[in-house]
Length: 211
Image (spheres, rainbow, N blue to C red):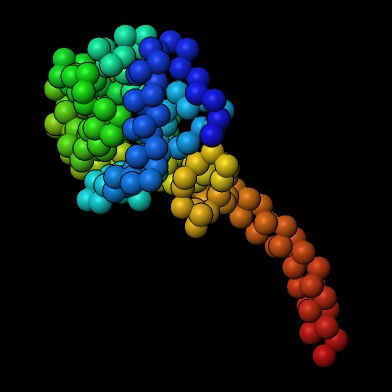
């Protein structure tokens, strides 16, 4: 295993976090896959699957925890690295949830934080919105909010987050060609194929005229 990089944390805290990460990797919660960074174990990230029945369904959202020097006495900061339209996630990806604010307790642990973020996708809290537009739509025009959030999921969260088998524990069936980039490539391929077919079509017309 790579050397641990927790420069800002006490040794006993570092050991506890390593233990938690190992447990999460060997026994992951449903819909949550921890990304293992062998170069820096303090780089705590995970992929959270969008819950069914929400506008985030079928999406895969990368989230990151940033631990401060006072962790675990003080809460970590949470960020969505995948773009998302959600009342409690700012345009910069910062997450606002009580567990990472006033309800924080030092013994909650990494697993609890990821589970809380996943629950936030099911039950947003518009009362503490960081994205005011999303919060207002959720309260006043839910269908518009749902469609907007679903569209953002389709655009940004369908792209594979699996960049390398060496530093992730994602399913090997994940298709890295999914998403907007793949769509552009497919469109380009169709254009090239159409251009190749044009001379063939002209040859067919000449043949028909001769008959």
